[in-house]
Image 1 (cartoon, rainbow, N blue to C red):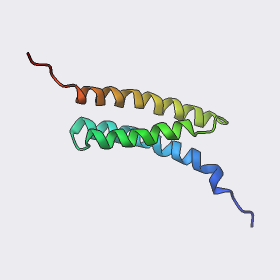
Image 2 (image 1 turned 90 degrees about the vertical axis):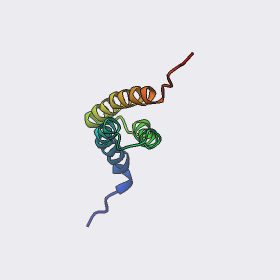
Image 3 (image 1 turned 60 degrees about the horizontal axis):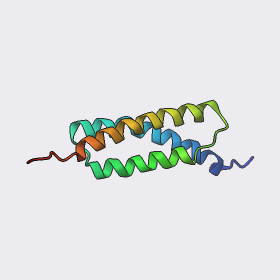
Image 4 (image 1 turned 180 degrees about the horizontal axis):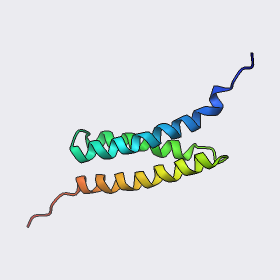
Length: 88
């Protein structure tokens, strides 16, 4: 029975997980179920998954693009939540 190198699939698995996390983070931020700090930490994982992803397949490239677009939306939401109103 041939041995499969599970480490070779790990970057793609992380990228798929990051792709699945984006809508969860966005939804929970919108409903207030997730603290901004936790969303930022989860976003860091997604960013790391993109940086460590192999660029050897169309699936990887498509996932990286989707995750990066999602991260931009999340960061915009986080910046809006951290905005402190200025009072005179």
